Length: 341
Image (spheres, rainbow, N blue to C red):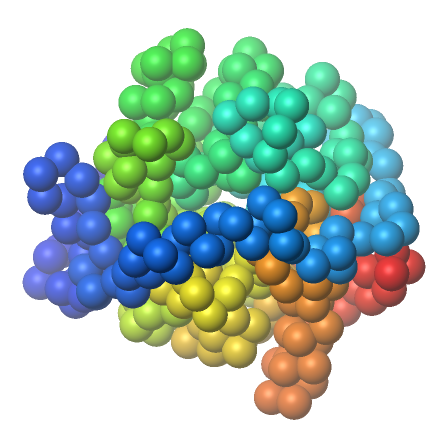
C-alpha cells in the first residue's frame, strides 16, 4: 500500500492543490456570491423552492440481494444512489462516497431527504475491500454509514484531512490512507489515483476547506474508471485524460448545479465536456436522482445530459437505482426517471 506521486515537473500549477493558513484552496480564483446574494439564496431554499425539485411519484428502485452481488461478474457496477456506486473488480468490492442515511445533513430530523431508499442495506453488502471518498460534505461522507461499514471494510482511501475525520470517528488508523492530488496507491491489485477537482469542503461553520477534495482514477488491469466526486469545470479534466485516459467509464456529477455557484458544480454542458476532456468512452451521470440540493427540477439533469450527448455523438449510460452495469460494455439504460414524473 505504498503511496507514490507524479513528479511535480509534470504537473501544471493550475491542477495542484494549494494549502495556506491551514486551508486548502483551488488554484484558480473562485466566484464569490457576497452576503446579500447568499442571504437571498438561503431564503429561496427555505421558503420559495419550486415544487418540481422533488419527484411527484416514487423513484423506481431495483432491490439487490447479497448473493446477486457475489454472483455478478467482474467489472460490474451497481448504482446505489446519488454518488454511491458499488464496483466489483477482480472479485472484490469497492464503494464510492457511501451515503445510506435518510438525510444528507448533520441531523436526521431536517435537511435534504432521500427520494428513495438504498437498493441494499449495509448489513446485506458483501465484505468491502475499499471505500473511496471524494470529500467531506454530508451528501458524500455519511457518519452513520462509515461507522456501520467499519467492520466489513478493509481500507478507506480519502483525500488529505478526510482520513483524520475517519480516525476521529473510530476507524482504525491502519485502515486509512490519505492522498493529495496526483498521489497514488495500490490496494489489493487496484491502482487508485487522487486527481484534482474544483470544489470546497467543510462540515460546519468553522472548518471550511480544512480538508482536501479530489476526483479518483480507478485502474484494475485494463479496466479504467473515473469518479469525479464534486467539481466545477476546469482544465484539470484534460490533464487527467492526458495522463490516465482513455476511460472505459466516467462517472461525473450532473446535478445540484446553478448559475449562482458556477465554480463548484457543473452545468450538463460542462459535464459532457469534462467527459470528452477525460477521453471517456461512456459517461454515467451521477450526483442526481436521490437528494434535493438545488433549484432545478429534479429530472432536469437527466433530460439535459441525454439531449446533449445525442447532439454531440457521445455515448451515455443511465442505469436506474439498483441496476447493474458492465463497466467494459455499458448498456445505455432506460429513461427510468420518466416513471417518477
